[in-house]
Amino acid sequence: MFNRYTVMIGLNDKDSRLPVKSYDDAKLEIGGRLAQLEIGSTITRGTGVYKHDDGTVVVEETVVISIIDFDGSWEAVAQAFYDGVKRDYNQESIAVMVDKIESKLV
Image (spheres, rainbow, N blue to C red):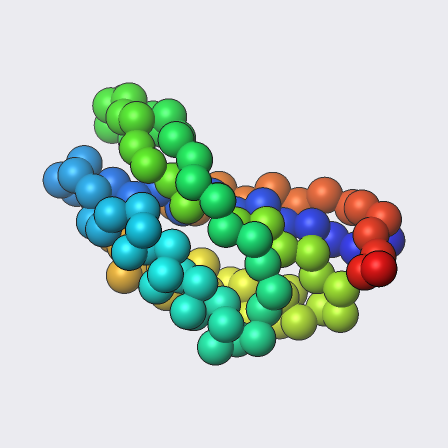
């Protein structure tokens, strides 16, 4: 059994509620961060609906990352990755789902 992480990063600034970057720019930048960490992933486009702490609801473009942690390498660097993205994209939070799955490379 392996952990599959689904990471959802909204692209709107938490204060201005406006996009920090375009999806295409964010995909390349975030993909580059993951490549530097030697983390295999699949990145797709999503649309998120988010309720801020103050109750404001926004719809925003979202970078969706799927990572299957075959060797525990993601677990070792995940929090630093999340903290860096939250800081650089001025995010209130990042949604992370973890599923136990069976998987193999064929």
